[in-house]
Length: 365
Ligand SMILES: Nc1ncnc2c1ncn2[C@@H]1O[C@H](COP(=O)(O)OP(=O)(O)O)[C@@H](O)[C@H]1O
Ligand SMILES: N[C@@H](CCC(=O)OP(=O)(O)O)C(=O)O
Image (spheres, protein in one colour):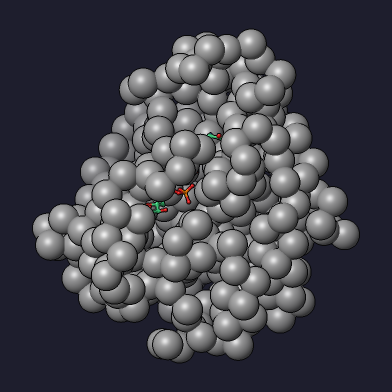
């Protein structure tokens, strides 16, 4: 078993563990996962859960035939979501928060920033966020579609270093073990290529939706973002003892970049700046020498028509020296430039915090 180090993890728990019989929530497998989360938090680590199971949990309440329609599944999810949340909450003596998201939310820049800020605030306040897809509004193009990929997006937006996918199987095998009894467990994947994708079959149970393919897709996204992914058997209590012991009992997908380099690359090369912010000498010095966030008090000029969540170049005397994601629109920054954070609410009617560009979302050029 390889060694396991982490500080902030997203733990994805599939339908098969939440609702093993496919009809209601069960505590059967959650106790060991909850204990792992509680003990990890006691060690100073941070956790976000991505939990499936709402459709399965609400199934018996909504009339349906053998193949429920999308609307019937959405109704099941709406009923089951509260049951799924209540099922988790009873294991913890700290508060849990419900976070329902769609594909669109991760791909809209300002919503992305809002999700990030909310998760950051929840974690800073020791709340356990529990994420699921917002099935009421998400159909087809709006849908991530499976919670493995949703968990990868959640890991990226939460800036986790680790994604732990808890399934009903020990990890990735060299063939679907339900069909091939000689299949062997792969404990380490260093490169997610076509050969790895070729190993994946579909879901193993009626309640699961993605199978191994969506887990590999999730690991692939995470590897590119500097996040390690583990696939473990969430139905075995000893798996969580091993994880607490720093051992990895399933499959580990190694990240291809460090989180910092992945983020820096994204900020510098992927994001297209839609505006420019000029700052004074003091702000430039603070950003370069002390690694500070950019505060509106140091901003002298705002150019372009950008929204909160857009990328902007940060310049001094017209020369760009940094790039980052702004938390305020161009109009609002124009109004609060040169001001202290105490004044933001009086001037623009709200405050998104003291920083115009948070240090975490800023790269020096
Ligand atoms: N190469 C493989 N290695 C392991 N499991 C595989 C593989 N190919 C397909 N599977 C199937 O994927 C299933 C897990 O996915 P899924 O049923 O969607 O569960 P979950 O609810 O945990 O997302 C396993 O039970 C297994 O039958
Ligand atoms: N939002 C759905 C997720 C379904 C889903 O992706 O399930 P799984 O393949 O078990 O992770 C639910 O809560 O039932």
